[in-house]
Image (cartoon, rainbow, N blue to C red; front, side, top):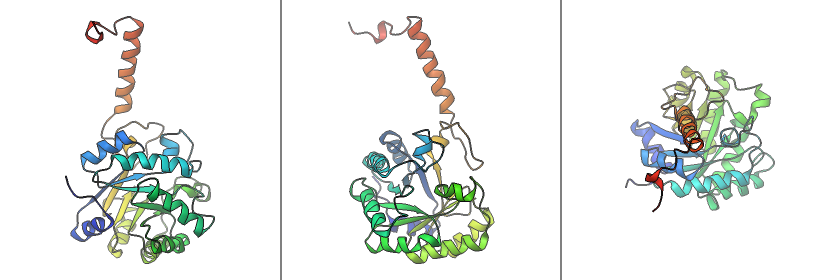
Length: 263
């Protein structure tokens, strides 16, 4: 088995020009499949509020719920590095509370690092976390926890602010930064300026790596499909078809047949 992916592994991948593959997963089964398929990083995203819980945005998910899902994913990850996503209001109130919550991801959830949304405004927090040996992945551009401030899910085009945010989080100690919904030209400039890896989601091919949600990749989440999503399978349709057939066979007395009955 390949050695475990670490913070230093990702930095080395950037230096060697190797693309980083990150996928968001929320449970043991999908995390195990993704890990075995060769994914480098498994992000337990706060997007589970929308994908798993059916909420309208990412804001309602709690720390306890995030830790619960992170522990499942970490148990499945033999090679991939696991990142826990700091949910809304788990780090905004105070640095002390943020450190305690981030620590839970490592201590209880089994993650190797945490992800924090925001640019310059969270730089002091990033520095505080890294000072106590909690690695931090930053996240700039479209930050879903700021949906009400941003006025919805919109492409972020303020080049000067985005470059400044990226440089600031790097200087604060982040080992990587997610670039979400940023024009490719801007994300390319950021990637070239930084010594830490950039992970794009709706930020073009110039980033050091890419991240998508596993349910999007498999065609399971059908409520909406962002422009940046590529569905590599249509499992939502196939799953409905399979269950419909099961329903029909039970109703018609076809299942269980003798093949599926003990004698």
